[in-house]
Length: 123
Image (cartoon, rainbow, N blue to C red; front, side):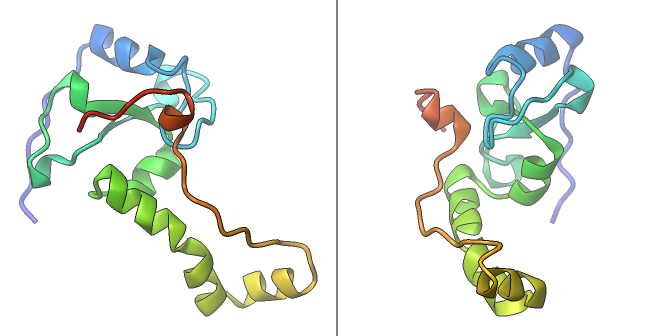
């Protein structure tokens, strides 16, 4: 994969992105506490044609940004939806926790925080 150069965001731009969801991750909704805890995610990754512009950026926690990687929003949704199946297949501790009723698997659609807040994704 080629290394695509990203432009450096100004402090004003980072602050704008941070405030988009009142300091919360656009995907899971967790509090980012401060701007240094925020990572800026390209909703449509640059390597698949996304723009390096503010309208293609969301505030993200480190975990969501790490798991989203180079996926677009719908592929990220599919990835998350497949987690229970992969955990059941691969993780012994998860399966023990399910058998003892410590963990319960619920089949439900993945709804991102920005969707719960009524923000329509345009990319």
